[in-house]
Length: 205
Image (cartoon, rainbow, N blue to C red; front, side, top):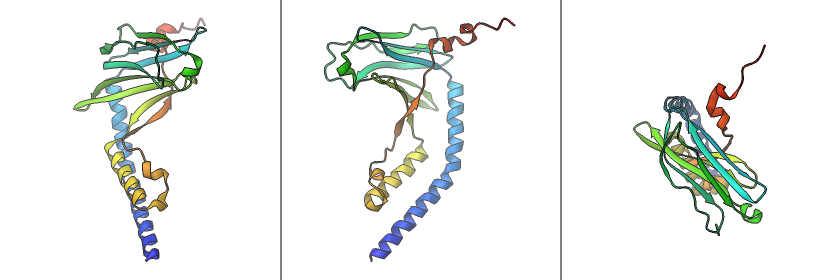
């Protein structure tokens, strides 16, 4: 009976891998469509959060390009007591040429150890909208972007998590597999990048 169960798990694992290989091509095609969508929608962002010499953090977010960003929100997380820090007002729409969101707040070094700043917005996607986000850890300056999984990837990960919870031999990490998206390390444009060649002089030779 135990041998049959093991073989059953092996067969299910092989079937899952087969499905993953089969949908790989579809995922690649979907990635090209997503890339085309970003090119079509357009829009660049420049996001920074740095500390000065007086325990004050300066956050700046601006956009460029043809895209329009909606419901742009900047928030501070990981701090139990914000000391009355007021976050910037929500920008209902934000496009190239609009003034950047600038936010300065004071935070002790020990309180900033577990703090991060996140900016979120929504943009058109197919027939609806999709939320996007950037987040930066204050103590390290590491920047991350939120990436949603495609519908196909969500389905595959749902199956994998179900199998892992039914047969624990597949590993503990698979039992809590994220289904919807993940943070990915990234880098941001700067204000100079949004100006294009206007920020770079031509050569003299």
